[in-house]
Image (cartoon, rainbow, N blue to C red; front, side):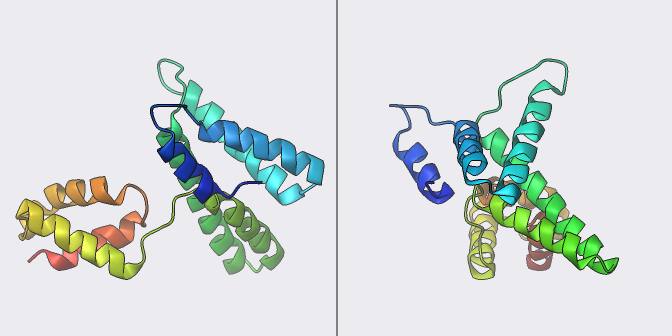
Length: 168
């Protein structure tokens, strides 16, 4: 099985020559998980595929999601796993919380590496400086510009809190 980060690098390298689809990699990994009888990976990959299929048929017209769309679905699934694990911990169901965290590990293998706090601070400072944003009244513009750069690599709440703190 090829790590997701290598798959993403291969996809970026092959842009224009050959189209690699993340969902195809997930389906391939599903087959591997079936053969290995890896229940957690199997359950998680099936959930990803189901969520992608649901996203493709939702709305007025059915579409095929590109890699960015699939990554958004996976990120949403990861967020659900985090919230569910916290809820199970709060309810004293540690075994269910552990299951959710195990699924989260599988999901994170398909997501791009997140930004650490230092990288996020530097990115926000750079984007605010480039766009000349410094006042609280420009919060909407600042969030739009920063979110375009962050592209799902950091928690939205953390980004918003940091941008709000930087604006005077």
